[in-house]
Image 1 (cartoon, helix red, strand yellow):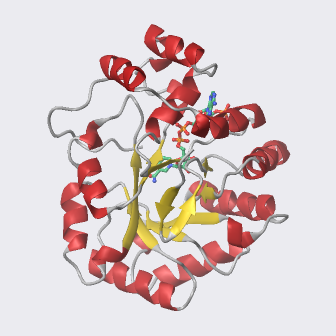
Image 2 (cartoon, rainbow, N blue to C red):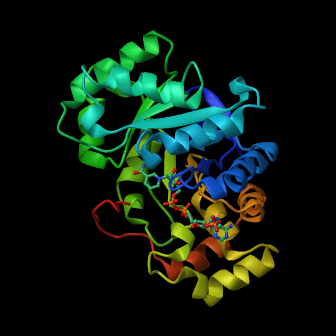
Length: 282
Ligand SMILES: NC(=O)c1ccc[n+]([C@@H]2O[C@H](COP(=O)([O-])OP(=O)(O)OC[C@H]3O[C@@H](n4cnc5c(N)ncnc54)[C@H](OP(=O)(O)O)[C@@H]3O)[C@@H](O)[C@H]2O)c1
């Protein structure tokens, strides 16, 4: 298993997503266990956002990580576009830090593009970095044109990652965004890496080829989806699960080495894009 370089660290390529977690008191214990079993098995990255459950996901993360060494973790949170201004970003960040019960974030992302000029957001993010409140910053849901614009701005090159939707059924970014990010040596953080439990309508779980590859690797389809996602060594997948068995399986997917033949067969289910496609969102 190859670790992925992000913001000067080498991290385990599978992280934990947290959207829709922390909202239901009856599920709290199970969700804490799901996060902890991931950390116990090598996960370092936890992905959350001020938006998730209006802060509830960040509170759940704070509770879950209490017994762990903070320095070994890699915490990501996100600022809403409407809060990404000179006036509001510092408060949003303070509140996220407070809810997460930590002094710093490893990576702070602009959740998606909004109306605040990106120059202003970057200035605030750099300020937060110099104050030690974040160790790095990045973006989410940005396509080639916006990333290019950022690269041409002062400090734009310091953008440490782009988090976008990527899974076997959503390969559009391989046409131009992935090559661009590879050139920049900017890691991709793939959200919805198991196609939201195959709920996007691509019917991946019904594909005979996927089942056969999973059997060959003594794994299941979701593990193959994750192994595929992280195959190039520059991608981190952040599957979300509240089920401890699923989390353990997801973590183990990092050990699966897909062969060129496996990859060719997977291309036959969902081919590489041959032209520009709109960025898949949410
Ligand atoms: N930046 C953004 O705009 C953005 C947008 C969307 C998501 N995200 C981030 O990315 C994370 C993941 O994306 P996502 O939640 O959209 O989709 P996902 O991780 O592809 O799918 C989550 C769903 O898949 C199921 N699942 C996970 N592992 C499984 C396994 N091994 N076997 C069977 N089912 C499995 C989960 O159910 P169980 O609980 O039953 O396992 C859950 O219902 C989010 O939690 C969030 O942190 C970011």
